[in-house]
Length: 272
Image (cartoon, rainbow, N blue to C red; front, top):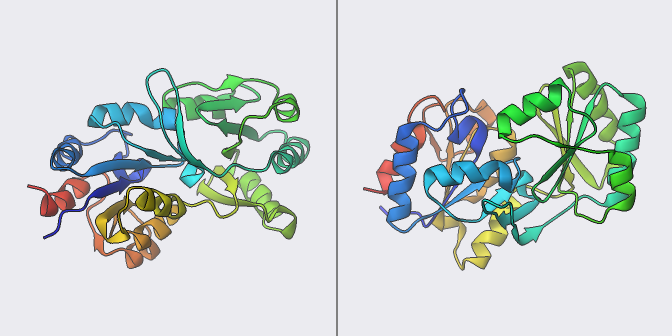
């Protein structure tokens, strides 16, 4: 059985269990694969900074696909980035979005992600919840002023609010006026916004080409709709047991859920 040269994994619901922890067997399996020459790549909606601690726990120092493909980069303990590819949101579009949501849904939490920076208007319950999940707090600033004056790339916007509010905002964005962006729900209460065309699969295509590999050299693990194209592109697409049926149907392998040793069980078939 040919050993994959590139391993990609989504984080939440895939690499992490429901307690936001990596299972010991998962760590063991990935470290064994890396020792045998495979490259491990984390692919997530998170920032590189939000993935760095997990990379350290796995003992890897490889490229990360961040913000669902909007930024491919490496980072370090000082949050210094080496950017390989990026597909940011147009600043004018981001300003339009911020104004629209702040005016019509002032209760919503608007968040901007730029490189390793997380910017928020306030530090309320939504922001504290997100900080607990990713391991660091937001920088509190006036978002309208930052958007008007700054020049830093905008890799992702995250809107957090009650489910009914997210439904209303998402409906508003599914119109030709916002064709330059792609919006999708990662939770009932989370709306993720990136530039149109941004996917983990697109970032993977570039990464494969840069490393002079082919899709057949890659194995990818995922659990949700934003992983579909990545699982389809990789030579071996693995859906977690907790994935929706549509995701499982696309996958080559369906393993156990993220609370069990699903990743380890699959890697063990390829790496001793």
